[in-house]
Image (cartoon, rainbow, N blue to C red; front, side, top):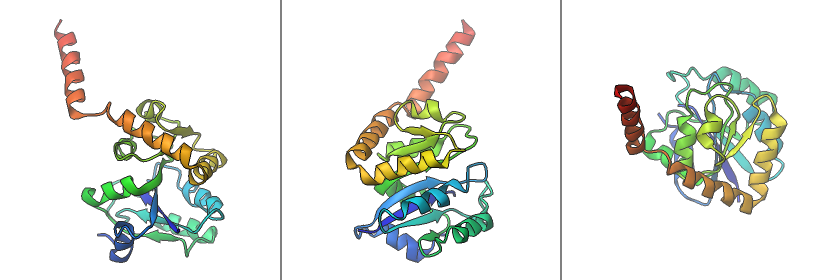
Length: 205
């Protein structure tokens, strides 16, 4: 069964969108890519995993208007350099109501950041039950809190190791998915509001 790998960054190419959302037996693998994230890690890591099965990487994002200024041209160059032109596809912006389907269907969600203020995509992915692999920088270790795997964003080999294990070991993948759902329960607007109120009460005391 061919697998579809998706990179999230910020309309939608109708052909690829239909492929992703048609539920015709394809499986999805997610990666978040932005300017401040390691852009070469996804194509090179994906290339190392291509020998495992017939998988495709779909890069989702509004390359022209993305406020994070994802480097579309550089990504295209990397794809060509790794000889992945037939397996990597660029779409465009995907709305939240469709994005949730990608998170839910993915084999894994990778956030290869060099810097991350919070890591909302990782929380969104966990809430949808995705296996999450993220870099060990910024807020991400605290956000995942053991729910996903962490790697040095400079260490492509470590990322490849996690990806291959997820693709080859269904028990390991299900364990990460279960951890994600459990961790996601800790994030809610109600919890945030309660914590903020406690802070304000402490400041008044």
